[in-house]
Image 1: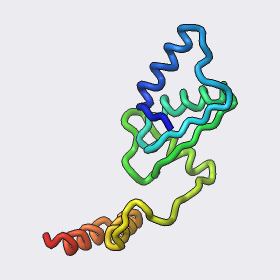
Image 2: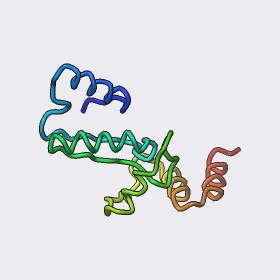
Image 3: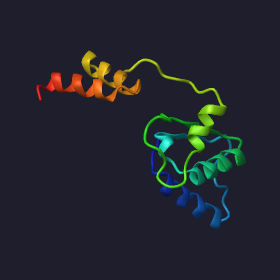
Amino acid sequence: MPATSITHFLIRIEERIEKGLPPLPRGTVLVVDESSTTPTPYLARLAELVDGCDGKLVLIGDPRQIGAVGPGGLYGHATNEIEPIVLSEIRRQHDPVDRYIVKLAHEGRGSDALDVLRRKTGS
């Protein structure tokens, strides 16, 4: 799957529009990772684009993580309005201790997670 930044993507879309080309092919699916960090105006523009081509916008992220750089809140709002698919099994970390640290952090138990990390690393 080709990947780029949202800013670069939107610049290329505007270039297509200036040339009289359709912004996106019909049925385009846009996948946006780390959506919670995406400014609301960018997400709104992406939603307009996929709506205009009968496409789909897939947002991936965690509303509990760092927020948008710039005006934000749309992603967090969307996760309250639309029932999201929630991943419950950690697969990125292979070590069971690392998985436990991530689980603690996601539960809002950052101090406990740091204690486990310190014990693991011996620092």
